[in-house]
Image 1 (cartoon, helix red, strand yellow):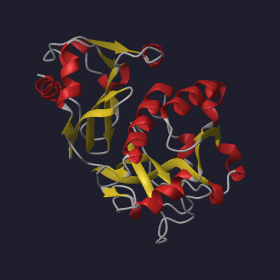
Image 2 (cartoon, rainbow, N blue to C red):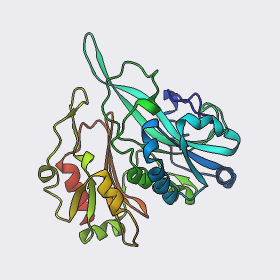
Image 3 (cartoon, rainbow, N blue to C red):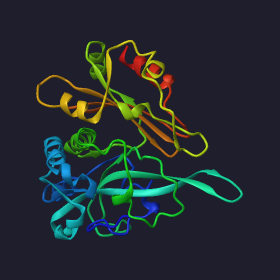
Length: 297
């Protein structure tokens, strides 16, 4: 399990607790304590060649506090007395069992947290965001999830969208219920004339028994029931689409987290404008896209 300064000892027991998942309105003193500190987003070793790209995207998306983007290896330089941390919490979920083996799918989420032990009464979890983990077969959670895990959505543009949504929530002094479903009808109506950017990895399909990746959807099959303009894009193409300009930029998002499915639409400046959560679900399918089309109108 990941341990960071300010977040050491995060446990699976805190996964669904009120410190990370529950809806709440923070009292003014809690928000003042957050604004008095600097947030730190730690990059993995594999991210360091693109550190400037991550830094530019994340700092542009975040304004609740000063934000520093730093190497995970330098984490000891950021004591809890002056910092809050974007970091990871995880748990393993059995998705299939047999007489001699079990398949585990780790759920990993990005959280913003404050104190040295999440069991303490004064620990504050300001928000939690699901991440799209690439399949791993794990038999324990003793490894370094931060360095070893790979994510479909751990890219500068996708993480910037996530941080922007959390930033907007905190501007209102609130934390949204992690499993909420909702739609911003006014924003979604713009998709009748605006392009919806669809990250290529959201076409991924997973085995119903092991959760391993299988052949992806074809764009034609998955999106056949969406009548409006959309474009499947690589991470580089999405980053380019999100640069500059005052126009709205809408981005589709799909996270499979063990049996949980989060279908979302983000708007670059407005955060999540559509979220449909489903429990005990294996894959994205054309019904999910049809439901989005109905919400757009």
